[in-house]
Amino acid sequence: MKRVAIIGGSGYTGGELARLLSRHPDLNLVSMTSRQHAGSKVTTVHPFLQGFVDLNFEERVNSADCDVVFTATPHGASMDIVPELVESGIKVIDLSGDYRLKDPGTYKKWYGAEHKDLKNLEKAVYGIPELFRKDIKKANFISNPGCYPTCSILGLAPLVANDLVEPDIIVDGKSSTSGAGAELTKATHHPACGSSISPYKVGNHRHTPEIQMALEKVGKGKLDVVFTPHLLPVVRGMLCTSYVSLKTPMEKEEVQKTFAKFYQGERFIRMTAVPSMASVTGSNFIEIGAERAGRRTVVVMSAIDNLVKGASGQAIQNCNIMLGLEERTGLDFPGLGV
Image (cartoon, rainbow, N blue to C red; front, side, top):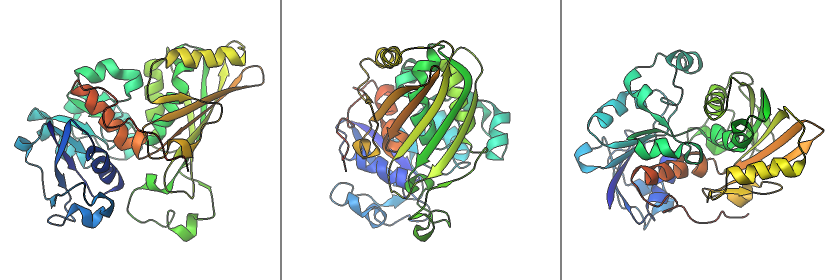
């Protein structure tokens, strides 16, 4: 079994990684770090792991003890950690936003800081398996995509890759409160969001350039993505509704055949008339639906669990590919349904 560590294990994505790894037949979780909780049992922070993870949080990881490291640290922190890990020869999957945007200038614009690790920024492979599997197989360092990008990019990729749509794309995203992380904020405090749906970071959400970058990579030209996120009063889940204009009118059946052909054989992608967050909650699946509206508009709907396919599950899917394991290992189970 390959030995695995999680750096930044006290947050939601760290806990979700531990939950999924605890049942993985080929990966052995040997270490979790947390500066705040160093020395404490992992189960004091993640009580749902009792009986599955018997570890104490550590201050730092001993790279000699690991084959793979997941970094589930805040944006900006990974740049201080990743260089040493990559240099040591360990396979690394970073779940922060530090290595997703390939252009340092774009990173500075959207994250408000200079990038400190240009060498590994260039080296990092953007990890959406269904789109970039060949690159992931050869990689030692993966930048795990964000939740909104995963949900919207997979929904739009078949149309963009086949050069069927105009460059102007609108993405309307709705996410659960767990997407904001474990730290309490005024916006995610239950009295503020429990009976409300609110847009946020309109026109300046940092996932906008990430969505555009990945779609331009699978497509044939420049795009102009407008992305507006909304906060839902639910714990898990994400739904994106995207709007594109066809270059040439297509029947609904043609549109749906395009999706079916593009994702043929992809275990974690389900085509359905109306995607449901409940159907994918707790799982690594994404549900995608496409409907034609008018002569030239296609409405694409996609739903994921933001903590699984949108973060930790996709990270393990990437890890499986990097290690030459069966891609669905440790992830092949259904959603909760309710």
